[in-house]
Image (cartoon, rainbow, N blue to C red; front, top):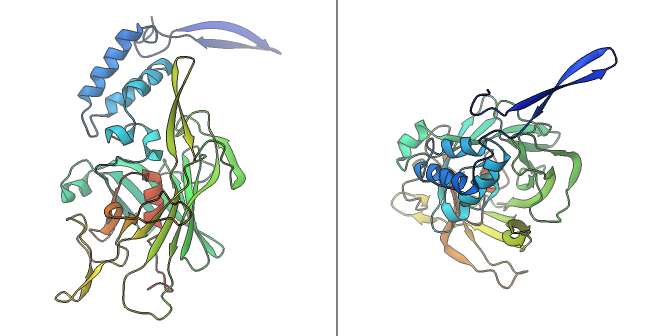
Length: 356
């Protein structure tokens, strides 16, 4: 008899020339043959016991790894990130954050090897969160001739566009004031890749099964020039592709598709000059503790090409700031995803002589 979590197998023989090869045909194990009602109840209980945070939620992921049938059932039980506010599966990294509250993360920088690591905060206590965290993504800074690229990956030990864990990249212009964000997956159904050099399929760590990966232009970040060197913080403008999810029913199964809804334009929240402190100030609500030119808050702004867009200067959609020598907080919410927020924050690193 096989082990409880290993598939039952059936052996056969196949001859290739003078070599006889043993063939193992995997069959569905007893776990995959559970009644649908029982399987759904098991997953509901595991999801309920998984709590709001990691590492307890690893039990939910373990259940989804049993087999394809368990994975499909888990996808129906676990609500997506915009609804639940929980990062559970890898797909959550490409989903928009919740609308009513931000997802609190932090970034660790290693100057020696030009690496950046994104973690999900496991506690609301800022100092405690910096000691522990759930690893989400990593990025490495490369120089490509006159340009700078940040390759973003799920694998912190092997970062390259040829790796199966490749998520996307950020690429700067010559001056380092304009950046383009490229996603490894199409941002909406029917999107065309900007480059065909890296088309492939994700393996076991793929973000979305059966989706070809390449380089899809999903946004850009621009820092305004400061030609007269006037005193003040950086000014930035972001244009992001943030498609919505449309649910349809096909053959009694709920199918989710991404549809293009236009661009989301973000601008930095202008700080105020504090006469007593003699510095520019923004209210980060305790999430930023060290003054830095890299600190910023992004809010939605009116897009002239889309009359339905709204200028909302009250809701901070992304904030990024320094809390230690090599540690920065990153809090994001809808319509941005963790990947998009991470890419925008990476653009803030490095000196920008034309903007400061």
